[in-house]
Amino acid sequence: MGALARSETPPTNAQSIQPYLDGVLDQVTEFSLDNGMKFIVLERHQAPVVSFATYADVGGVDEPVGKTGVAHFLEHLAFKGTNQIGTRNYQAEKPLLNRLDQLAAQIKAAKKAGNEAKVAELKEEFAQVEAQAASLVKQNEFGQIVEQAGGVGLNAATSADATVYFYSFPSNKLELWMSLESERFLEPVFREFYKEQEVILEERRLRTDNSPIGQMIEAFLDTAFQVHPYRRPVIGYDEDIRNLTRDDVRQFFETHYVPSELTMAVVGDVDPDEVKELAQTYFGRYEAKPAAPEVSIVEPPQQQTREVTLELQSQPWYLEGYHRPSRTHPDHVVYEIIGRLLSDGRTSRLYESLVQEKQVALSAAGFSGFPGDKYPNLMLLYALTAPGHSVEEVATALREEIEQLKTEPVSAQELERVKTQARAGLLRSLDSNMGMARNLVEYQVKTGDWRNLFNELQAIAKVTPADIQRVAQATFTPDNRTIGQLLSSQ
Image 1 (cartoon, rainbow, N blue to C red):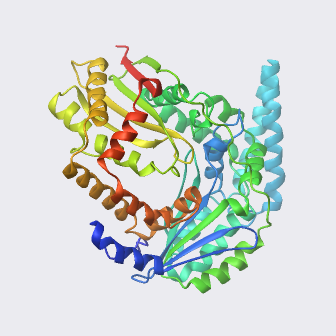
Image 2 (cartoon, helix red, strand yellow):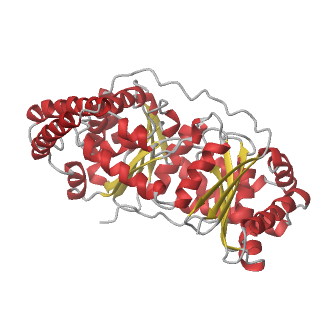
Image 3 (tube, rainbow, N blue to C red):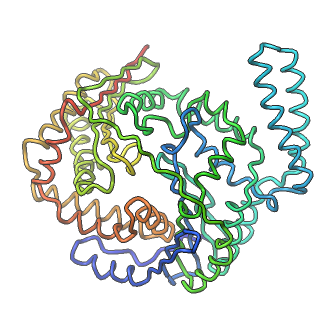
């Protein structure tokens, strides 16, 4: 059964939104356990289903130097089970996993020493031990338990800012979710580490190393940010991924997956009292631990235009980025509206100008809040150059649109259209239980209160043409600009 139940579709005009929002607000219950773990529960009884989102307040920005990719690696391993799930005999499996770690370290040392004979010998033993360990693994048992109980959408996502785990169940499986999810982070076993390492390296090859635009984005971020960890790829650098150990993952887990860093949303056909009782039974077992320190590195203001150019076998791309403040800044919604004015669909200014009118680009878009928005970040604009045209032509056309935002007030009609799109987009994401669950936890953690999800709708309504001009003039300056050019080497 599909567990992403849809509620009554919310209205999108400003006047009629409030009763809908009030109805949602009345159905939310929140509580925290003594160990610091927070729960947000939204009752929606339209269908006998419930969606769950576990938000770990840890992402790529939190990784130690030299260990990029560890947050994403941990997300992969979180599906591998516990000392109860995913194993035929953990007592027999555990020493094999420890032996693999020893052998991996010895192989690394032998390679460094240039002892090829020793490397070959150790690799042979490694393959034998890995096969023994694999024979004790119950492949994807966690996923099978979820599926057999009617669960759907089991997945996770790691970003620069956070790691989110999510899936949906029939509502009579609430206790099963409590049991599975609490076990997953209480007794994790990071099995199949070395197989997953190869999977992640292949993922990096596809996404970045063999992708011209992937390489460009990595180089662009490394240029736009000088010190803040937003400059590093979430998937990690190749060398860092290769050098990560199971112990690195465990240390990162023990540092960041503490109760006060975990926030859960439960949305659907549930009784909040039952959710609270079961949460205390299952998640109350977690020991309270101090939270990991927040990222304290502050990116200094950019003082001059920065540029990065790559020549690869690719159609030419042009990128332009500008620093902007974090999501909690009062001007956040103004940046969101500017992003939509410039690049939201076929009615946006960049698409109409660069693609339809001047025909210098095949596509032109962008977004605000890149690569994350927990900390000060970028507004990124980009275009794929049309055949017979140059990145210089694209840059000129794009700059004209940016200058117009600074010099000419947006018309009331265009602004209202974009506001309606922004409200509709936000409300559409709340239409499903899962969309609501993921939004509630994100706003709770990033802004300090899930209610800001709804306050943002009011803030959108208040944005004026003068706000847009003021923010555009302050942001779109040559000193604050980073340019990326991906040129064809053919």
